[in-house]
Image 1 (cartoon, helix red, strand yellow):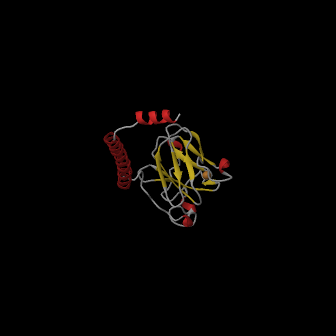
Image 2 (cartoon, rainbow, N blue to C red):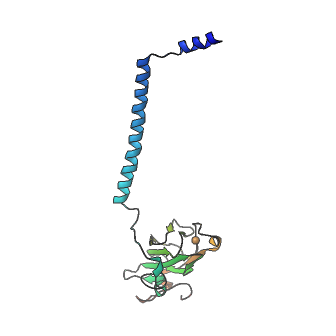
Length: 192
Ligand SMILES: [Cu+2]
């Protein structure tokens, strides 16, 4: 038995220079991999700093409903001088305010949302409109609706016990039926 082990050991003996060469090769391979991973981290970090995914706009959640852009009277749809629509919505546990937005079809629409408490999701059915609504930040989404109809707008980011019931709607009306809003006028389904 002991002889057998010794024989195996002797047969498996690899000359020292070969071992050193192999280890050096593996060391270089590992160092190169580490270098590539570090480069990816550094380059994506710098790249994203230089090119943010979207305009980063911050807002104080304590001002929502009370003052500033998201004051209660400024929520809902607004008509911009260029004919486009801006819809301002606050997401909070567990509803959207307003809970129903009205926009005209075939018109550029900009949604501006922010959260009063935790992270919520902004998703409009049958569209590729999907974004996170993070407290302290303004989510700015541009889209347009070609066909009139009612689009469900559920919160698609789990936000607590009432998350399943948190949903709003976007009602798209034909362009000629959309009320010609005064600059200071805001609209939602209730005021239509
Ligand atoms: Cu939610």
